[in-house]
Amino acid sequence: MSAEWALEVLDRAPYITMSMTDTDGMPYSVPLSLARTDEKTFYFHCAMEGKKLDAINKNPNVCLSAVSKCKPTVGPKDGSFTLEFKSAIAFGKAEIVNDEAEKISALRAICERFLPKHMDAFDVSIARSLARTAVVRITLSEPPVGKRKEYDAQGEEMKWGRME
Image (cartoon, rainbow, N blue to C red; front, side):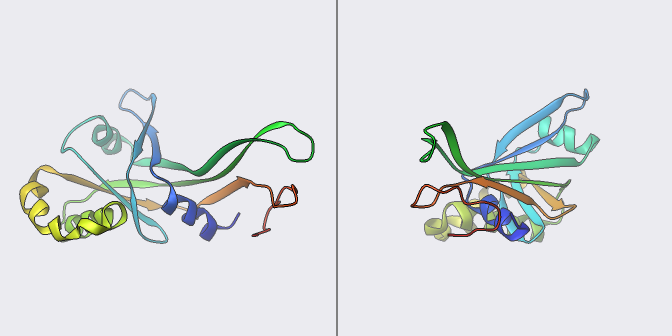
């Protein structure tokens, strides 16, 4: 599927798993609440210290993975057990944000994505917690890719590019 389609999957996913290499060289993945601000920039927030930040400081290369639809089903034509899904994957570099204005902008994007009806409390929350909140920017190094398995109303699998 197209990069635009993959970005939509990333936008709709309730969380995105970020994979990286920990400081001992072992794989490390963690589900996060990310917000996207343009075609290649994502943000998340976390504590000021911890395994994620240690890993990013040692090796900033990350992989994002998301699934926005996942439904076990029986294949309409052949009765096979299968899974309908929409998924996306993206590669990028993570960097801890130090600029206060960018941190606030990123936190606003995260709050607008996950709690848009509570933005009236944003400024108070920022005043209370900005100093103890880390923000990480992920810049994609290439366009994301997406994949899906989905059936139409007639039970035909919708192959690549078919958007019904």
